[in-house]
Amino acid sequence: MEKPPQASVTPVRLRAPRAAAIAGILFSLLLITAVVILRLSVPDDPLEPGAWLRTRAPVVALALHLVPFAGIAFLWFMGVLRDRMAEHEDRFFATVFLGSGLLFLAMLFFSAAMAAGIIITFAAAPERLLGSGTFALARAITYEIMNIYAIKMAGVFMIATSTLALRTGFFARWIALFGYALALLLLLSTRNIPGILLAFPLWVLLVSAHILVVDRRSPTQVKTPALGS
Image 1 (tube, one colour):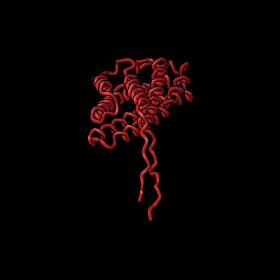
Image 2 (spheres, one colour):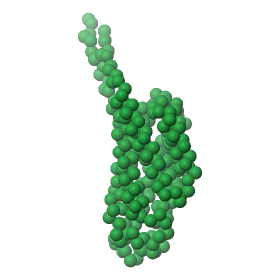
Image 3 (cartoon, rainbow, N blue to C red):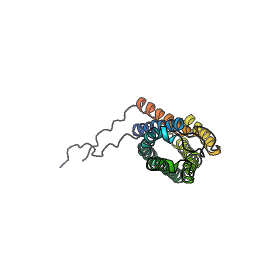
Image 4 (cartoon, rainbow, N blue to C red):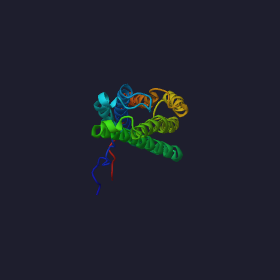
């Protein structure tokens, strides 16, 4: 006896391009906002005595509270991108992509936690913290991790992502080449270039906006029901 025609019961997965674009845009906007607030509130000199804590500590704390949400969006961005290129994934570059992204995120969180610790300590004992060796050490560690190590991992992530994009075509070739150029800038940069960290979220924002535009323009693929017998 023939079975009646049945529609495919395979669930449609979350649209990878759109999900990646939304996550990337959220990450970019949150991190750019946090970095701009920090740049305007905290002096560039890592050895400054900490006078900004008396007037700018609440604003800096607000910026630091944005970091965990930026990190969540970045994890989603990585996961959806990796899901999108799963069929054509190169194990070597996929490993570098995943490792560099997670290392960047870990350093970002560590730096934010160190900065938050400075603010908490200042609230408990302001006179003992300002100008102390403890403050200088915590400030220097935070500055070095963000402006040297995290930036380098961001550059490696951009190289791996751009290489995978060239091989799989999940975003435009010119954006991948631009990613190589920015990654080289990040890898060769020193700690004395103001705002260099903004290059990374701005590039992610460019990638995400491009993916979102292309996804909207592409025709929706409709799966026909599978006939069983």
